[in-house]
Length: 222
Image (cartoon, rainbow, N blue to C red; front, side, top):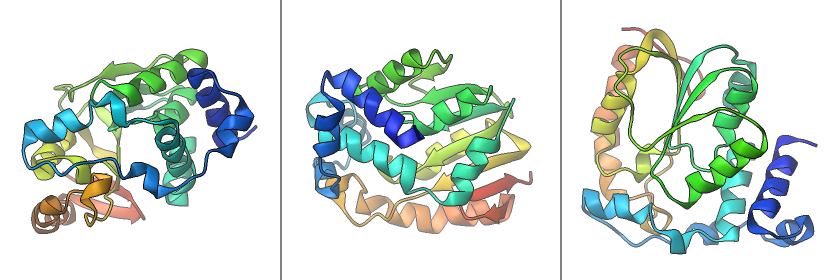
């Protein structure tokens, strides 16, 4: 059984459905069109705590995306990483944290409390894995060897400020796994108004302080 099949089985157990019912759910990005445009920090944060928007279709889409739509280099890196201190920011349904935890890494998961984290906690418990859950970034200077931030910053009101807070926790020589979705669709939570922040500030900062090893994988220089 591969990781995606295992995740569908967990989803079936969590929702008290059969595996066949889960398999029959179509994978479509339409299931992610559940966001209303928010232009305040409080509005954006409250959006991700909303239980009503999380449907079986949405959960399956997130499982499929996180297992199949990441660059191969990133997935390979996660599977090879062992005995490291890892921070998974915006962990969602937990796919990346679970891979790291099963490789005997110390894993800290950060996400807003809500239905996605509830499902993630169910998955971790069912696998007997010890993962530390937080809803804010821990204040640990240069503590982590690996920082995972995949398709998260485009959903945050002040992505650059958040990014600076995150990389404070990463060791010199540590690895940053970073992907940022295109900010062209407010209905998918990829809020267009933050596009300028990321283009003007964040990528310039990365170019200055990080070395790109592979697609989505960066090493902190200083």
